[in-house]
Image (tube, rainbow, N blue to C red):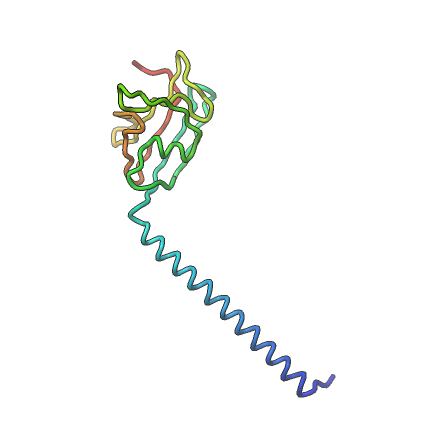
Length: 151
């Protein structure tokens, strides 16, 4: 089969146009990627990751981890927990703190309550303040446990 000169020119121009379009598209996505990297660097100090465990020990024994949860720097535990679970709570003006009533529709009752812990060098320690008063640190690990309190 013999190609005419005109057919070869049209084929060549089509091929060059295709190469140019691929180059333009690749360039566009490269620039967008660079812009996203710059934005990520810009927000680096404004966000942090934390690890949140929800332990249903006193209910059905299920343990659910939310590792690497992205939150704003300076975020409190209650706000971080609301990012990974449905939380019902009551604010007590006299204590100036919130009391968690339920997580994921598992409600406190007369014997079991939601208690929170933080991981330290000594293991799990009870949370020292209300969840809305506790400011998380980057890469901190905390746990909510549905349990019969020890007190």
